[in-house]
Amino acid sequence: MANAREWLAGTRPRTLPAAVVPVLIGSGVAAGYHEFSAWRAALALVVALALQIGVNYANDYSDGIRGSDASRVGPVRLVAAKLAPPRQVLAAAFGCFFVACAAGLALAAVTSWWLVLGGAAAVAAAWFYTGGSRPYGYRGLGEVAVFVFFGVAAVAGTAYAQMSSLSWLALAASVPAGLLSCALLMVNNLRDIRSDAQVGKRTLAVLIGDARSRLAYLGCLLLPFVLAAAIATARPLTLLTAAALPLAAGPARAVRAGASGPALIRTLGQTARLQLVFGVAFTIGLAFRF
Image 1: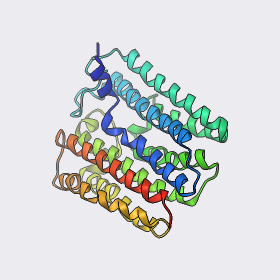
Image 2 (image 1 turned 90 degrees about the vertical axis):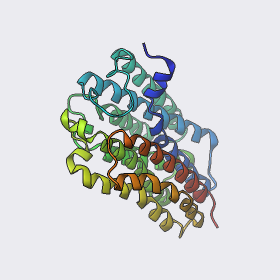
Image 3 (image 1 turned 180 degrees about the horizontal axis):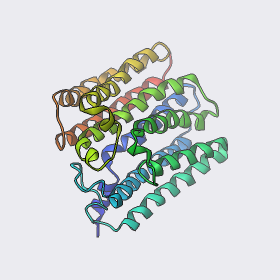
Image 4 (image 1 turned 30 degrees about the horizontal axis):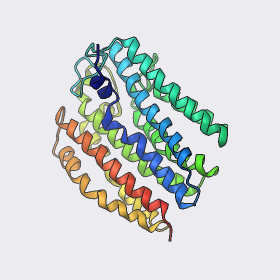
């Protein structure tokens, strides 16, 4: 039976900035319009974290019962390593989805019931990433879903939940958030490119190959800084994101140098750290207008 540390590892902590950062950025947008609501931001954070942890457990379950994780090089997985029965991991996934739905319904009740449709789409996307008979994560669409749900939807949705309106700034700010989330997934899939190809898991990295995957990762890692500089024409302090640029040196160097397999586990952590620091700086920049 898995212990508490192993269940915690099953949440894949290195990926959690993908849930936290978009909520911070969306809240920064709301604050910039003087409409920040702490309790609504907290509910949005619960939704995002519960969805992220839920999709991680669901991925653990679905890949585990398919045998896709049998020869992976990343951190241990609960089902594949037989640390927990599949039904327990599945229950953990759906428990997280329930928490996300409950928090989302509370937000919808005070904002707009249209949020329910967005939430339902997010839960469906979380499950069918690797679940069901035709998982889209096995067809190179993982990065598309991550950009939409952990970029556009998360940032714009968080801002909308506090402002009750949709602004151009929320949509613009969602793009860097989505790209950094894609960088996390891309480096994860780059690490597993060989084992995924062997089991027929055709991620985007498998489809476009090693060299193009590395270029795509670098683009997702660095383009957010360019976009933040462009947004500085409306919110000058978004230039604070430049403080996170040195953190890009390590992972960019490793990927350009051809790091592969277990060597990219450290790069994944570095990418998550960059995402978090960028997100905090970007949030501050969006929250203050001159």
